[in-house]
Image (cartoon, rainbow, N blue to C red; front, side, top):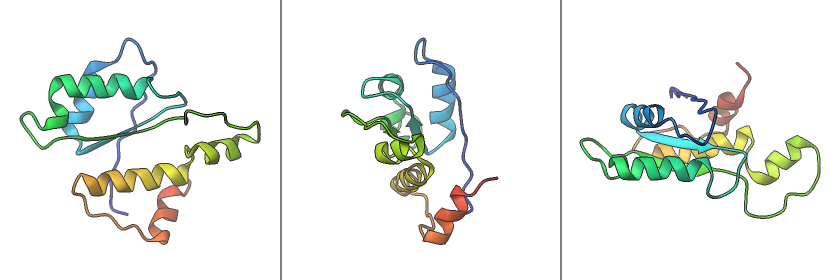
Length: 124
């Protein structure tokens, strides 16, 4: 797809690694947080940090586009893990779709063909 990405493991929600979050926002046009948590977790901490630092309104540069993926605020039926992740929209397919949408929002031209998305989800 011709797109490079950074995968950062924050390891914990609190205390938030503000250096890591700041670097990601300053060095990337878009940030997508992905967590097995519900509303108010890691994504909320990242949002607050970027809001206070001015990264979301472009303080000193182009604004960072921030989006989050987390567990929905509802019950998820007991099932095979792959089916639960699909239901929660936290599997590879949904992560790629969200990343492409966020990149478009950030002004990056992306190839959203099904072949390109399949290649993005392929095992390395």
